[in-house]
Length: 112
Image (cartoon, rainbow, N blue to C red; front, side, top):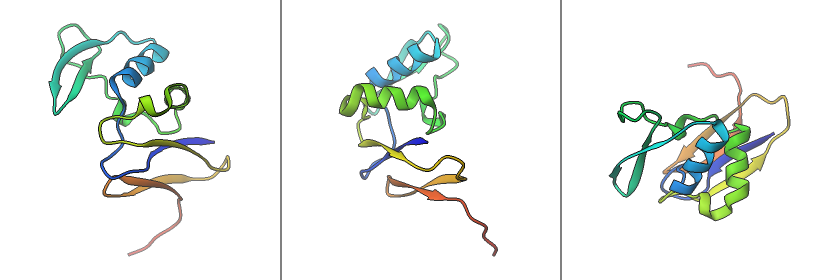
């Protein structure tokens, strides 16, 4: 299974081109809103009330993986260096991070 992660300080994020391509693959029409901290806000309605939230797309979403593979470094958001890692199918997994640098971990039990 392929999983998208960020490999630099900063955090996971998509470029404008990547957001637009992801929306296209999802069959979603985007409406451009304001720019906040250098990032364009995209909405799924012309009233600009319902944001297209690409930050909560599952990291193993086939469309997200496709966008990153198609665009390469052009998929990177302002503070991102996106990479695809492969993990075995059937593994319960999660993403951990430190200062924006992420890695995939196998889920395990924990107490206390």
